[in-house]
Length: 525
Ligand code: XMP
Image (tube, rainbow, N blue to C red; front, side, top):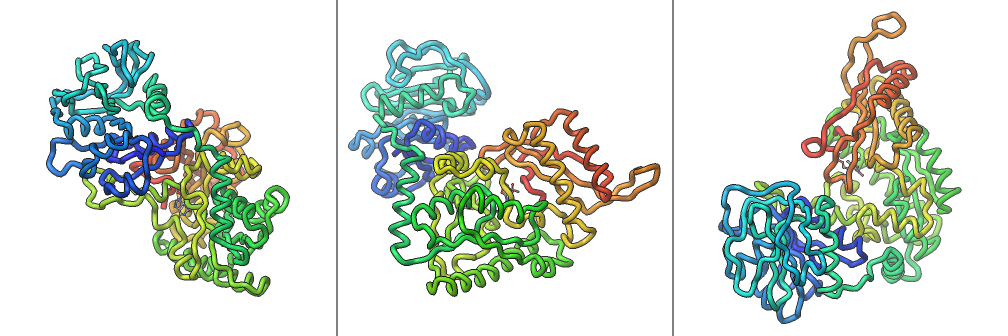
């Protein structure tokens, strides 16, 4: 497998994905992972050092563990440094990196590629790449040669004459780098001799085996199905492993979309062919949420109600089978477990990208479950591919994500007031149907409406009205960690706004959210 050491670049996850896209398994470790973790626990066939926002010559800048270079040489592990990673190679092995104050940012050509290089192979013509650096390598360490320059004359590609050490000042992993993928592939297959063994079929087989071994012959397992892609794929996989010792429950918490519970229960039965119990806790949930406006309190209350519901479901399964279920399936994904480098300026070391609200507060611990997380190693698009090979219906696989606390985080203020839930359900239904009708659903990563706690003046049917404002949001993203707003055609927005204000009496104004993440988040609460 390929180990990628993360020095905090915004593209680090992308490197991991690119490597996996060519069917080589790659994992991301924090830049200061210990020697033992890098070499003994992960046994890399190649190592990539990522980019990052620091300067290698500044005191305290992150580096590789002691003994790293010697070990790579001893085990003949090829190393590719990208951006900061290349500067680390230069700095650590005796060269010089300096901040010359000019920097190079954006698309630009790499020139002066020699005819014979190990890293570029046949690709000796100038190529446009994506550059983003302030420092540059001014003196190369012994044994290294320059194999590419920028137009300004900076060294932007290096390799060692005899050892398999390589550096690129630019980002081969981004699509703006024309031949970046070819260079990466050349590094992986021709230099590091990686094997193409990472396929979803292998992952499936391996994970089924792991679940079988973990659960054993008699234990029972619980899974909360939400109707979203992650839990459906996780449940389908576990069902393949242990059959009907898996018990799924769908919780109607009263905060779901228009006819959601009805619709997904039919889909579970007819399309997913999994036995699912529907538990309706609407009444209790809404009574607990009454009068609550603070977003964090809402989440806590919802989490607590979920736990209560699970305690009951645990008993139900015990009554039905005579066995106390010991395991809980969760659809945790790889981006939730990656220990990324903290953003510059943050005092949090290795802030997990996981958000506390993504796991229903303390659920497994409080209930004494052991966790089964068969998707822990996968990115969202890989989960979709895994779902596809298990014949999980497209209806599930291609669904937009929906947050656990549901419409509660899309109604700003008290969810029980002003018929907000009903209003939002109608607006959301009209909006999503229009997106589907215009053929945009698959292009958009997530779309939804938000109910705002303000009223505005309007004219409806020749009369002054004082009604609610709703916000529409649609974003493109890879994994929900960063996002951009979707540029709808004005015609679409016009049509949707017309439909909403004509069909939903309680709304007289529609606004469209044009903020990316960061600085916003995707949800409004
Ligand atoms: P944010 O709003 O944090 O959302 O940018 C990123 C992604 O996560 C979803 N989300 C949640 N999912 N429980 C969930 O299961 C939550 O509490 C939660 N909050 C946000 C959000 O819909 C988006 O896809």
